[in-house]
Amino acid sequence: MWKIIPLALIQSTLLAAAQVFLKFALMRMPAFAWTREFWGSMLVNWQFAMSGLLFGAASLLWMYIVKVFPFSLAYPMVSLSYVLGMVAAIVFFHEQVSLTRWLGVFCIMLGCCLIAK
Image 1: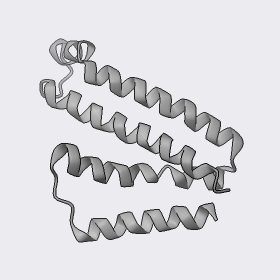
Image 2: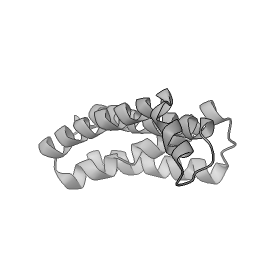
Image 3: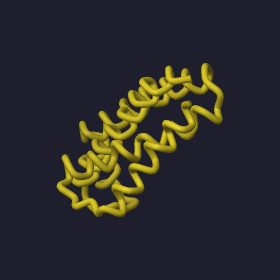
C-alpha cells in the first residue's frame, strides 16, 4: 500500500498550491462583498484562475486515488496537504509556526505512515 504515498503527495501538493494561489488572489482583490466590483475582480485575477486549475487537477488525481485504493486508506492521506500548507505559510506568507503546531504536523505525518503500512 506504500504506492499511495507518492500519489497522495502529488495530490496534496496540488491542493496546497491551489490554496496558496487562492490566498494570493484574495489579497489582491477588494474586501469580500456581494458586489459587482468584487466578483468582477475575480474574473480578471490570474492567481484565482491558477487556483481553480490546480484544484481541478487535484480533483482528477483524487478520483483516480479513490478508484484504485480503499477509501479508508485514501482519505486520511489528504491530511498531507495540511503539512504542505504549514510549510507554504512559512515560505510564502512569512508566518510564525509554533512548536505545538509542528508537533501536530508530526502527528499527521506519523498517522499517514501508520495508515499506509
